[in-house]
Amino acid sequence: MDSARRPWSFADWGDALVADLARDVAGDVDGSLHLGRRHDDRARRLGSDSWYVFSALATFGSVDLTTARTIEPHWDAVAILAQAGTPAAEGSTWGVYAAAPPGTVLAATRGADGAWRLTGAKPWCSLADRVSHALVTADVEGQPPGLFSVDLRASGVSVDPGAWAPRGLRDVTTSTVTFADVPVTAVQEPGWYLDRPGFAWGGIGVAAVWFGGAAAVAGALWGAARSRPPDQVALMHLGACDVALRATLLALRDAATAIDAGRADGAAGRLLAARVRAQAAGCAEQVLTTVGHALGPGPLAMDPVHAARVADLTLYVRQHHAERDLAALGRLVAPAVDPRDGGAPA
Image (tube, rainbow, N blue to C red):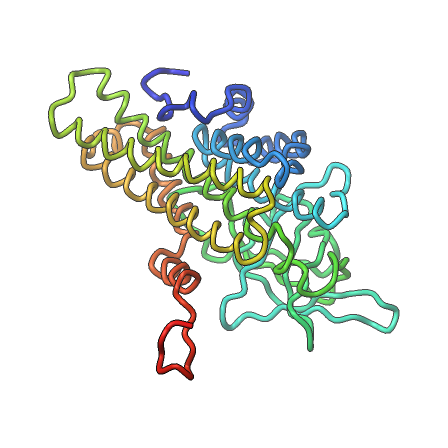
């Protein structure tokens, strides 16, 4: 790898073989899907050898965020299906569509024959125009939401990219998918998707990608320091990036250990994921700001690789909902209050 573009401390967390594979398909969505599918076995090790999975996702993120953004949800689906005891169909590629913003309805109904069908719309479906299958959450009357496996090529499925016009991750098209009485297969019982031990683990995988992308952006700063002796301000920028990235790496490694040890199920897993995602998102934002301050407009205007990486990471990290997700984390760590005791912690 060109030393001027070396991701920050890659030897401490990266997978050189994965990096070589990722470079071969960088920017190619279909090639990235094919790569992810060829290595589904790695995704199935989430929960038993989780760092093996997170390291690969971080490496993909450090090489090319389009590739990482394509493979991560496919692997998430593969891991979910493995947890459900339902292997992915041979040759299939997957998305996971669980967004449920206000004003949108997707309902699953079960007929007299026991078959499930989906009707309604699901927004924020990335790569629905490219993947063959998806895991989709839907409302189930009188029960918790259910998770359903659907063939996106089935009759009654329509994909509308709408106003998708990003400056980052431009080839990872995100659409609204409409289902008109489409036959689907239930993945376990309603409520299983949210209650399963691994629900929070996929979100930590996304955080690993953010970390890899941030390490690559910071690599531009490292390269600049090699080209000319850094002054005191440049050294401060280097130190700030190092602290943020190292703290995030340690959080990811700790999360992998906790998952494998069985200490990240249920409420503990939700708390762990919220903390790691907040750490990784904050790291990415700090690195983007620090590198921008340190290097100025030059690489954003003259270096297409760096400029694309900054645009990609800026959009990708917005999957973390900033202050709202921090408030949700605060709710998880707030002491329980007993209203019978005048508001004192229980």
